[in-house]
Image (cartoon, rainbow, N blue to C red; front, side):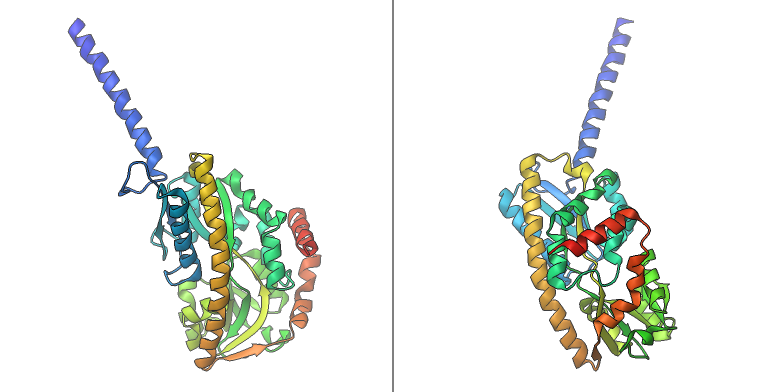
Length: 340
């Protein structure tokens, strides 16, 4: 009898030990990849939807390099581009449950998590690129980075995603009235769709991967995006008119799961933040260079680059800013305007 009890108690102790080890391994897997070279090395998994040639991806690679230098190899990042770990939304959800450490997403996609982020989708709220960056680096910009922490999403830095401009397959856009009646592909964002309606166009949300064929088949008459995205995806093959109206400037944001962040000591957190800040400055330079190259490439491919009277376009959609109902968004828009 005593021997049976002894075996029983031993079994319980072994079970508790195995369960404890299993939980520790699970906690470690939230941060480390399975093939990390050192048991003491912290490996942060980062997934995003851009290809490896994109300025943002190159800047994340720069961040990885700087993080390894700052930490003496103690901390590194495993980067998974081209949506191999899931779509933009899926990666955000993985951050929330702690199965992925980091991701890059458009601020537009954050509207569902942080209502104030909708302010970035409003047209012509920035005077120019310099004003845009002054806002992002201001106290307001930092406050918005922290707004998602209640949803387990901590913002580390912003990346430039340029200004969004119209491009069309048949009718050139030279004045606001040219947009009336056109079907224009937009982001799946209420603010973006309302803006298109204010221009008199029909907003048509279409998955990015399906846009080329939709433009070629005439399902939509045009789209709106930054020059690098336009040329990288060869949309110049089906849209020969590119209008530089710069209606919105919606940045990208680098996120880390708070379920991962909170497990790191303050020194490691400091290294990550420093590397992220440096990668943001690095990406800004890459983006400026890439934009110039993209416009030159488009022109070489026979695209007409159209400069327009931007104030006329801004005036057309100005009523949107006067009719903002969400008080939080209204406050953010006012503060953006006040940044000097």
